[in-house]
Image 1 (spheres, helix red, strand yellow):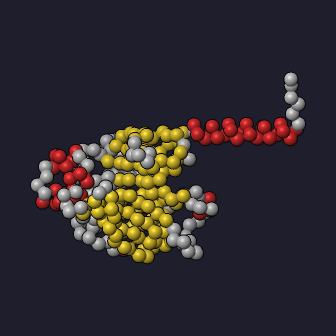
Image 2: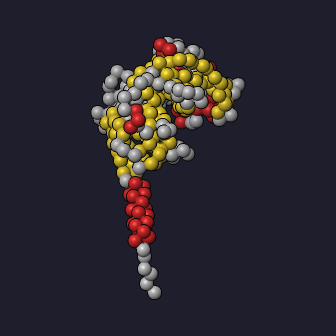
Image 3: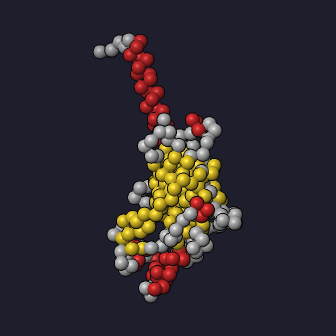
Length: 262
């Protein structure tokens, strides 16, 4: 028996098929994440491992930088938990890591990691529930390689062993407190940008965080959002943090994307 479809029904079916095809196309579409890895003097770093991860920190895509510090990842469209960069021969010996969080791949992205001896880890951002919504509260956990190595030295831990195992498994001996953050951070030690524009720092607070059965120190920084041209066309804000600690002279960078609510 052949069913006779009315014109409105045919239109609805056509729309439904178009939506399904569109959804399937977006799920399989691929984009590139590319960039250049450098130190803070602008010198390229070769053989850096670039890893795009899911929430379990499983590597979904990986590559290495070339002799000029350049890399390209071709990835499926989607939201990824983090992008990580480090030259493995440097890790915990001369440098720590770079992290980019909440990576939305719905177009080609340029991400240019920089890293040195401070790791800016676990960046989380929210808007205070007031109007106008012209500020961000940013939490991050800065970790100093020099302060970490000092703890290792005091505990007479073999450096080769420290490089190979999880940090918390060794430093848990420190009376359940891993004190590897800068003692203090001031406005002049921080550079925070939103979409490559400098943001004014309003307040800096040091807090104690519980993580992996130990306490660590982190910082909450409130910034005023810089004025943005054509910000209505943006789906995400990109926040970049560069910290230089006067206590140790070390430097580090971390970044995150923040989805805009419209």
